[in-house]
Length: 417
Image (tube, rainbow, N blue to C red; front, side, top):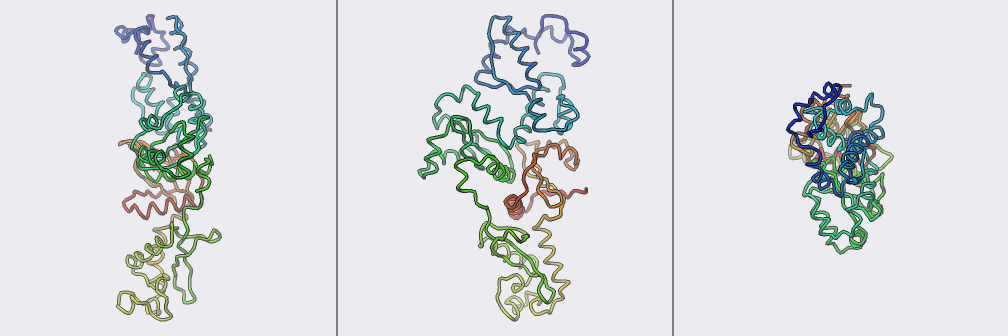
């Protein structure tokens, strides 16, 4: 807080609860002006209704005979563009509808922290990365020739998505890593053709923390498709080659089969390669007590090997009723496919008191978001407002299903619509 060196108007007292007595011992503007210049040097000011705050700052500096100029971003304008349809864009109502906890409302620290959390949501929702690209074009610190070591110095060792920019701010490569600094260092030290081209064109590296590897994988997939970075294009084939399919044979038994992925058929789940699929079906035979013959891993016209050693119940030779056998196959299908399901996958967040949410409605991947642990995530209204919409496609289905397979302890909440 600052001492404005004048009486506070009654309507401001009513709005904020701040009166003149509270500010009597606060510093005056000229006492903090030098520090404001220092901490905002080479920065873009982000504020809710930035025009108002920036005008106040410029006016106060003008009284001191100093021309204060900074670029600014307004979270009101960005919210109207990226979160349309809100009943109000005031900071209080907006953060409430997005499930952002606020302490000390109408105090500098409380409002500033709420604006930071809102800005993070806006960055998440900006899948075209226009905010980041524009900030690199505008920010003076990127106008000097950067050295690779300088870029590395500013990078963290966290899980997230990173963006490599050229001198115009355009994104030339998008990647994900569990250690962003280490991964960028690999780009800068590798001698392959793609890395050498990236090394010659890189001007800046920005990143978004995700906490969750699943969120990072989904963001990377979505943003590569949206932004089409020049050095990603050649690499972006489908991230899976094989899939698990089911069919009912003439004896009414539900069969499973690992096959080459076919876009015309609906798979139960998908795999990065044939070996991954074979490994999955081998474990499934054991876990669900399935027949080797009816899962395609033992070619025979009679009984399977497991039946001969008494560890298969005999579906291969109709010794086990198809209804009983099919029930176990169906439970495997239900566990490994989210077709028709309404659910939220809960994973790590970017901070201790935060979690990530991956929303699936009626078997369709809707998008990702982050929520504070103070909020109940089964509140659909809050959930839908924090979610950044994303495309549902074969790649996202593969990413989600593979992650669920590999992370057995993942928390999944079934939603009732």
